[in-house]
Image 1 (cartoon, one colour):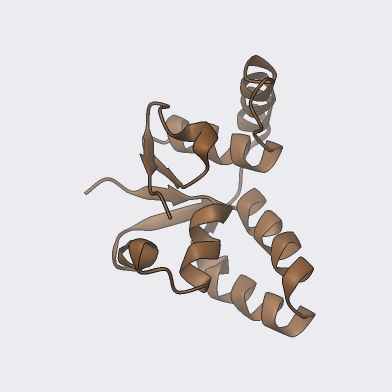
Image 2 (cartoon, rainbow, N blue to C red; image 1 turned 90 degrees about the vertical axis):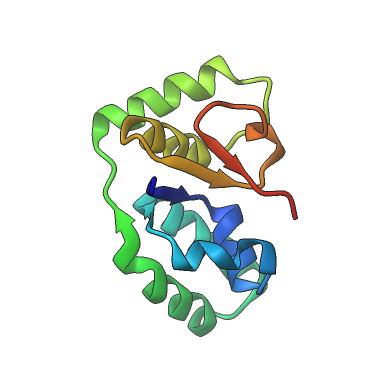
Length: 122
């Protein structure tokens, strides 16, 4: 089974109980520490601090640190795809996934036809 690296989009859908994303909890998965930070930032926009921190703590054991070289490659990827609406957070997750031979799991349309992506539409 190929390990998966979830992005914020996938985590958000899991939190909101979207059944299309529920199966991911039964698979091997990780996320980057950058994704965890973006999730926290996103949750705080819609929920209180306690709710947001609870979800961060649930996903924290799955978070992996991203090294400097991966961040540089992510910035290069972002620059090469600057006409797309891709966040630096997602760029880091995508490059981390590719570098570690994982599937990047997202529903962000910018990644729909990219290699190494498991695209799940809402």
